[in-house]
Amino acid sequence: MLLLAGALTLTLGACMSTTGTGKDDPLPVKDKSDAQAWAQQMTEHMAEGAGIRIDPATVRPLFTPCTGRNGETARDDRYVLMYSVHSTVPLAQHPEAVRKVRDMLTKEGLTIKNYRETLGGRPDTILDAEHPSDYFLSVSSTAGGEDRLLLRVITPCLLPPPAP
Image 1: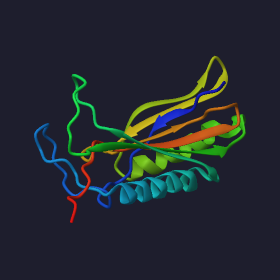
Image 2: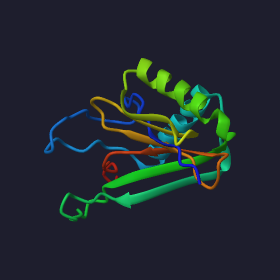
Image 3: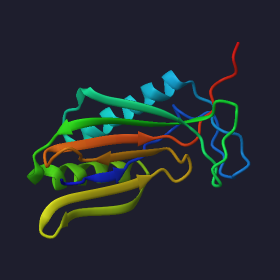
């Protein structure tokens, strides 16, 4: 199985309520449905930039509790969203698609952390990018065969708004 893995991050102003950079800064506040809608928009943006189509039947949102460095969790419903969706892309087109996404994200101010187009002479792309201040993480990866591209968004730890 070919793995196209990448972390892609876009501007997060629509998702974040704060933009702190310290470990003790308040968590961004975002309702789960708003976070999921933002993640969907982000994967659609990545697909559009790559010139590929998303298969809506493959959407998989996964909300998990935030876990601290030592395995601790809080009781305030803070969460991380891992949102993924597949696209069918022929293997030979993976490097071109990932190149387009890389160029788009670079122009949008993201930092490319890891990039590869081939491994052992075969297309096997990896693209990891992150936003320099908002820490919202998107991941693209191919799974389930050589023609499958997985686009994934991983949020930082988010806090739901207080109950009314």
